[in-house]
Image (cartoon, rainbow, N blue to C red):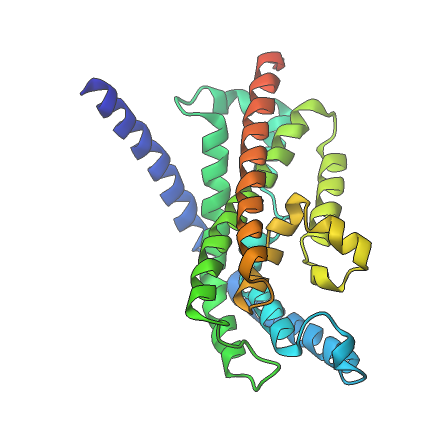
Length: 277
């Protein structure tokens, strides 16, 4: 009973931290309103640019215009969940200043603490912004609006893939934090990680639009298991055996990132030296 009680108390602590960070993120409604306008304008601009190219020869493109529009609107609606360049400056400051020592005094696992903080902040931001963008996108005429899912099954796989992609993005963020323990300046690690993840996750352009050899390589990398996978499942652009393989690949990279992050953090804390008084 005592072991079970200890587990429940620890779960309660983590739950409280998640709730506090989540509620804190919900306070920034003005910023969310500005973000909704910005993301809707950006999504409209992207679709109009692609539409201009599609009017020349739509058959030569790897995605149908309706599927591409759905991809872009989902990308804008859930930007807060999948923007790999979003980090908490406070955590970088804790690492570089040595104040991470105060975090280690807490009776909590440091990796789990930061992981939950990142999850809560991303979820709160996405919750404030996604509904208005999705509603407006659904009301737009075809093929420029958000279409319905390819099938009820595709929608179910989409939700599962969304969850895996979200956890993978958070695990990627945690890996960047942990790598900063081994550097003098975190900005180099962050710049490289941001550049790779933005381009290879489909955040700049959907991966099918990349040149053939690069696209074939990119789909096996962990970044393709982020927003690229769930958004293309939604529109039916990924289905059948490719869908099953994609979900397994998401699970594989999630396990790799999670375990690697924990292992490197363990090594970093064993070697960490905090000076001062």
